[in-house]
Length: 369
Image 1 (spheres, rainbow, N blue to C red):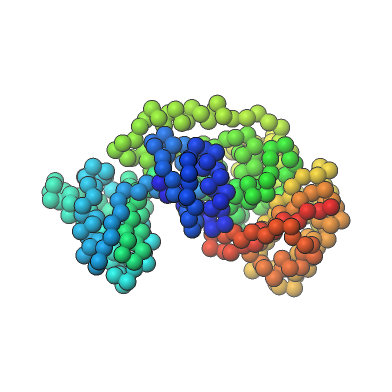
Image 2 (image 1 turned 60 degrees about the vertical axis):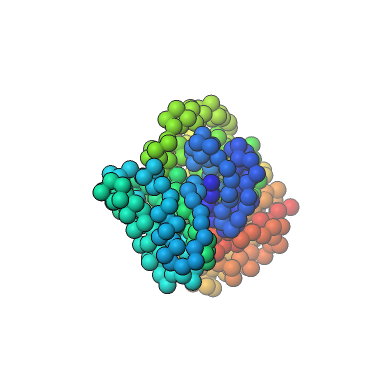
């Protein structure tokens, strides 16, 4: 199996997979490889907070030219995987001198699959770009080809709990990763003073109660596989109720925008977590600590929304507020505005590079003595 994640979350994901029962995960670039049976494949899809998707390796081979891709793909028994009346799509990640265009490689791979069906059945499965029954990933690095079958379907950051969202929300997988990096535990008070649509508070509540992030999803890619084991999946789903924890959580979300707060409240009500997450309309600079100590996690607005001078003053005010009011806390700030981060006026105790979509961000922690 190949687990895909965001840059900067590889080690936390490897640790999480070990907790879920994976043995000897191997860390790569934005990816983890490991071995899994059916039940473990279902379990990691349901329970992983830090993976974007899980792919099963179907085949790998070497090529000496473009024709070699067609020949190699044609040797895989696709008729045992895809039904003739089903649909498929081929995604790609290609870096090879044999192909001027990734689309040419994808076309060759597709032709090899449909030609195999035509020879056997005089019929062929169709291509479906939006909602295919099967998604394949064709990975080519120079002369080495690997073909994967997507077990996930929609990317795992699509948790299903957002009714609506604010502009530029933080990705759910990244939010869960930052919570893990921060060392937050359910018994530690958590404050998000710029909570937007409530991603950090919700991800923390799901973690604290040990509710899987995929609990609202009705479909995963593996459900269409010919070797899908219904009983193993039911057993996996039954574990949700066994593993859930009834804990008292001190999670606080604040935002200066009333509209953001309404969106956050709507999302939290949908999850029935309105009793576990305290939300309040408040400017962080006016906020008094609701607890004597804890962890602060914030994702301030990025520089494109405010002119540069105002942004630097804004970050300076954040640093001043942390120093004056939040002694005893540890603050974590994630931002893509590298220049403004320098104006916090505090010495970070740790630094991490993470990505929110394609935006490179710095994640800094500050121990407030």
